[in-house]
Image (cartoon, rainbow, N blue to C red):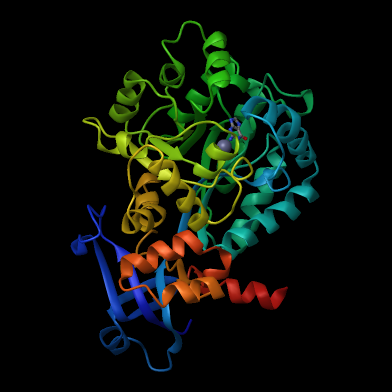
Amino acid sequence: MTDILLRGRTLSFRRWPEGVDDAASYSYEDDGGVLIRDGRIAAAGTYADVAGSASEGARVIDHRPHLILPGFIDAHAHFPQMQVIASYGAELLDWLNNYTFPEETRFRDAQHGRRIARLFLDEMVRHGTTTVAAYCSVHKESAEAFFAESHERNMLNIAGKVMMDRNAPEALRDTPQSGYDDTKALIAEWHGRGRQHYAITPRFAITSSPEQMEMAGALANEFPELHIQTHLSENDAEIAFTCELYPEARDYTDIYARYGLLGKRTLLGHCIHLSDREADVLSQSGSVAVFCPTSNLFLGSGLFAYQRLRAREKPLRIAAATDVGGGTNYSMLRTMDEGYKVIALQGEKLNPFQSFWQITLGNAEALSLSDRIGTLDAGTDADIVVLDSRATPAMQLRMERAESLAEELFLLQTLGDDRAVKEVYVAGRPAKSDMAIAG
Ligand code: GUN
Ligand code: ZN
């Protein structure tokens, strides 16, 4: 494959930015270059330096004056819920029962699953997201459809079929044994194939019997390198019902702890109403709390205590995510705009560098994948997004008054969406412009 040499304003984080003046937390080049070779980043830095190491005949793609960043990472989304977004007027449990569960029954049909998987990954790419941790439906076929589509695009994605054996329509229930067997078969078929990662996915404690939770724990034990994803402490009614179903547990978090489901690869959607004890347990186990602002606002679930959980004596690892279709937008820019407001309502701030850290390196670290994605570091995979801060008339006008990189990033987050995503590279291959041509 010929080298590809990108030119533009490059931005990549090294660590959490303490403040807007913390220039040591990131690398920024006004005239930067990224050299892509065999799907990986071979070099990044000033354009002059990087151009020097490109091979003869390298294809130069000039993205000036746009920003070149690592591709965005979405740490929690439900691919079967594309046609659930914008379902009116319900809190979590009614929303699941009235809209989401009926919709997910359609994924018994493998062809439907393939169509939606294709459209879902199209939306991810369109919005600049190159990695997503996705929930599939209960049907094994839905996970097969997702992985086949992801593998064909050579995307690094994480996914799993949800295990759910109670408190759901008959058509959406597996059994402890079939959930275990199907998961194991999917792991054998997909985990480690190309860039695919399997996540053990008990949907949440309400829809899994103690027997199924035990089976999920057994899988976690057999496959300690796998991610585990589930939901925790999203809504008051959910918490009360969960604690009724597991009276022996001290609290919601203790249920997952008892079945061996907490740890450094565990991704817990929401974590809004945690007690101090629960936060301590999550911190000690290294589990990740996943902040889903558009969903939490849309379903009226509550305000995630981002800064409090991050800065406590026993801090939590935090990721950010869309949670489509409880979440209302595919864009990580829109997600962090709403996230900023959720944090502001608690009298705190998240500065623009911290936001962009979160959806790139921060999420990569939360997913334990920062050796592969989340930066422009040489040796990592060439998953890249190109952002146009003047993508709309309103953005263009506001940019006339932006005087710093921090202001530009904040404007991108506040006014930007898929229109600001000029190009996306997946493992070094232009993916957004490709999609537009293919229609
Ligand atoms: N808890 C269990 N399942 C779901 C889901 O699909 N979406 C959200 N937001 N919460 C859940
Ligand atoms: Zn969710």
